[in-house]
Image (cartoon, rainbow, N blue to C red; front, side, top):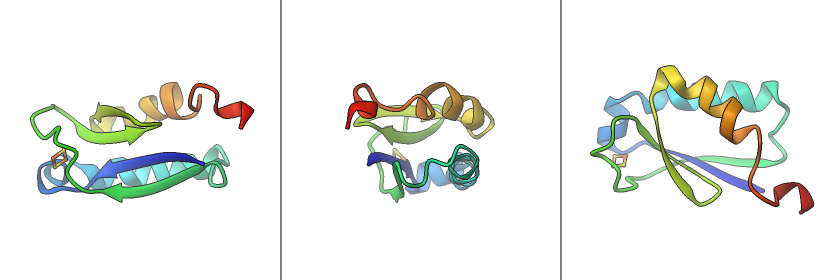
Length: 87
Ligand code: FES
């Protein structure tokens, strides 16, 4: 399983983490990835000073704005982790 988490700490909550979660959930369904991605909400990832919502995927930290969540999913999450397809 690939770990994907979206920060729901207070700073990210204000930046729209709820919308990012909604978008990811919808896309996980669309791409039929629910058996490949373990998706959860996380606490503060110490990236509050960044512009977007903190997202952790495959052990990497990203900053994603709600309006970019769909593109981020397509370009990054849908492609999976390095080596993921071998597991
Ligand atoms: S509240 Fe999200 S990184 Fe701190």
